[in-house]
Length: 215
Image (cartoon, rainbow, N blue to C red; front, side):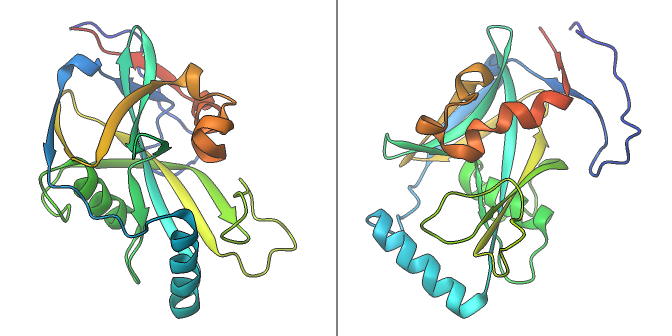
């Protein structure tokens, strides 16, 4: 096995593991299977918005956590995305439960979407630093990558975390979802296909160097 770059530490004081170098492994090292489908909560976008409004009225601001998982294909970093109904894409993750921490909630969600382990208590997900936050002023509007100064009651906060993958892993995905590896160059500035959050990932990752580990 060959290492592509020298490993450097990040002394900037950022959270998480604090490394400016991310080691990624070839997609061929990973194995994929399926499990029972996760039931859809909503039949359409209008149903989803109505459900989110009801949850906001009952619990306040919705906080979501999502993981950015990277693999190598054709000597280029790819992000693992879930495709829903052969149409829209999303990062693995989801809404936190009341009182749940970001890390524990993300581990639970990663296990539910990508593992045979449902609650994340025994999965060895390595959650690294938070690299982005997005805020939504209303459930019908697009999110902002900052908290607008006139926004007193945000409806949703979405946090993105880098997730370091091991050398190999089995991904077990619900049958009604597809797990796809999408290159960074395809995501960049492509909000029409992937939305503002996913299409902004290449910029968030620009501070990192990638150490591609080859066989």
